[in-house]
Amino acid sequence: MKNYWYLHENKESKWYKEAINVINAIGRKKVYNQMCFWLNREASFEGIKVASEWDYWLENPLYFKDAEPITQAEVNAIIEYIESVEEDDELSIDQSLAHYTPKVLSRRKKEEEDEEEDDDDMDFYGDWYRYYDKVFNTEHVQNVSLERMEKERYYYNIKEKSEKEKNPPAPAALEVPYVPPIIFHYETQLAYVARYVKKYENYENKMAFEGMQWGDAKREFVERVESPFYSLQKSKEYIAVTPNEDWRRGLINARTMFERTKLIEAIPAAYEEYLYLLEHKLGFEDWLPCEGTKSEDNDMIIKLKARILEGRKYLNEPENFDY
Image 1 (cartoon, helix red, strand yellow):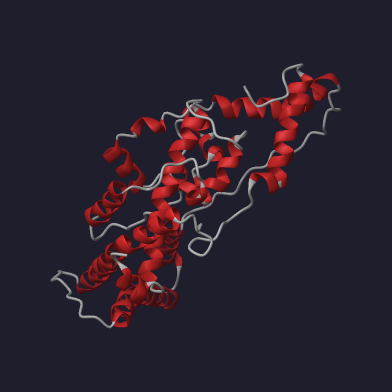
Image 2 (cartoon, helix red, strand yellow):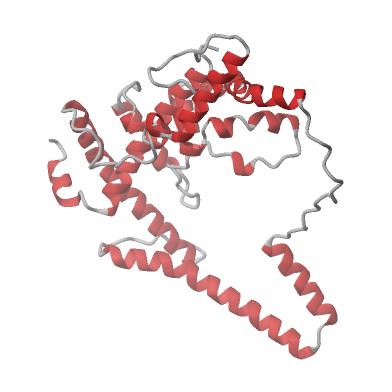
């Protein structure tokens, strides 16, 4: 093996484990692409009948045998992506496509209907995956049809919905509508408190409040410096700190670039081991343990499938998943 000595010396290191996660992130993107093709009825896969079954494979992409093996070009692309990220930007390669599942995709319809909805919490599609799309011309994959999932929900609910229409429940007693409390972000709360203290509190309380703010600022300063300083000290390597107007930012940037360099150094060895495991059909159990439960053992998916088939039977349609 080309990287034998790296494997021998560093296989248990933090960086090698991070490199394994990088390989997994490439595999997750490949499985995600296949899921999108399936949703658009451009591909079919044995053993996948309903959208929720993709959840397992997005968590365990290297076990998905219908995806093409990870290529050297894809490994080169992710290294180029890591090198392209600005020092001050967070490197979040594994920003969870594992949660960019059919359940999340189905919420897009609501986004389109409600333009004012804040969808920041729904943007699980990280920068690395956008970079992949740009390099390999797969942007079109994002044009996902929701029709297949909508039909699943229709068949799942049709029998219960029809029974309720035939036998409507008695009108419920009038209830006072729930009014959610107004919740301010921490910064907003602090601004309101500062205005109140300045206007209404006595001198002693004003001094106490200013002392509290000073303590918070000092704590933030310590936390900002402590983590990168500890990491650099623990590395036991010579690490240059580039000049910076804010020496704290210089420390943070030095830690950032050191960690990215170590990660990039580890990726080729992790990829070589991936190819070795693949070639010899050794599996990835010792490399990346499976997470979650396969669909054939997942009670929720078993019940989901049964209820969809029951709904199709109720409508006198074929009891299969060809819809």
